[in-house]
Amino acid sequence: MDRIILPGVGNFSDCASLLEKGGWQVALDGEVRDAGKPLLGICVGMQLLASSSMEGGSTDAEEKNLGLGLIPGKVESLRSLGCVLRVPHVGWNSVSPLTSQDGLFKGIPHDTDFYFVHSFTFVPELEEDVLARTEYGIPVVAAVRRGNVWGTQFHPEKSSRAGLRLLRNFIEGATC
Image (cartoon, rainbow, N blue to C red; front, side, top):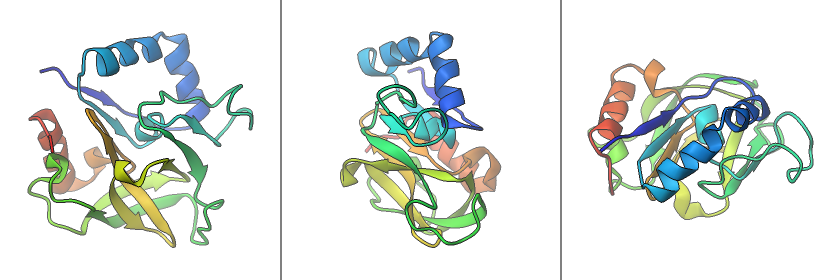
């Protein structure tokens, strides 16, 4: 089965605009919603899974800053959520999966460190869509999942062996 990885670096509104202009929103919707292909969003790629974002562009979510809406929720700044630590959050933090049932973290010990670089975070509407958390002055969503859609706020490709294991788990068919 084909799998899709949506990477992301930079600003939510810029990335969303590029996806829209390039026809990628429609293509991803067809592949993920209609064809059921698994998708993994990484960093801003995870944030793009949300319904909307407060980062960049207009503050009117109906006008701009719309995400793919694959997992309902919004992207908010760490500061607006009460984080008093240095922002952007750059560095290694331990990640705590909320369940051992999801195959994305198979073979990865609880509280393993992953590499983060972000100033905004995804806040899902439903707690059941949160797959893992980290602490950075406040609880931060580190990974999400809804059906065939996963996302990580951290960068697995920069997270040494644990990150490579997570990517292999996704490619080889992470399920719950």
